[in-house]
Image 1: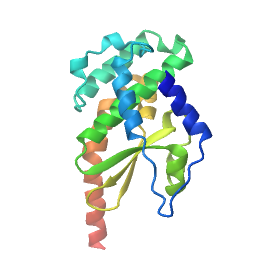
Image 2 (image 1 turned 90 degrees about the horizontal axis):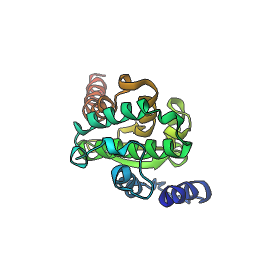
Image 3 (image 1 turned 135 degrees about the vertical axis):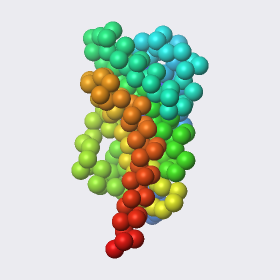
Image 4 (image 1 turned 45 degrees about the vertical axis):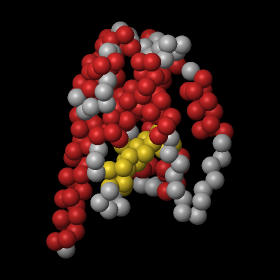
Length: 196
């Protein structure tokens, strides 16, 4: 809980200074910790964590099927009636696990966690797709290792959509799309540009 409060305070009250090259400060270590806390924080446990088995959470894409089941079960146990703090904790930690799974499995894109306000300064087009909210406060920005094509991903938002809509907003399908299809889409765009 202390880490969550400190992170929120950090985001709200620190003015970021940017170097001339405007490199975004990543939050990878913080979100790696959040992903670990999904099942390992005994002081402030994640709602419904008893549903998860540590051996299932190996950061494989397949492990996200268990995360889908976990989210559906949490919703059945009336997560929406829990204190807001519990919902935020579950969304952040589960979204962090989903995002870390994408980061660990994508061999073509280097993903980094960044804060929305920082990301939008360098990539204002993000605002055309997603407004700032709990689900978009932090996002993954990825750069292809083949070129400078930039990708955006909102794992925390996807977790919130899954809680709202169930399996139709599968975090497994979301991550699979991020890891497999974005690279294929990029290759199609490169091929189309080469035809011109």
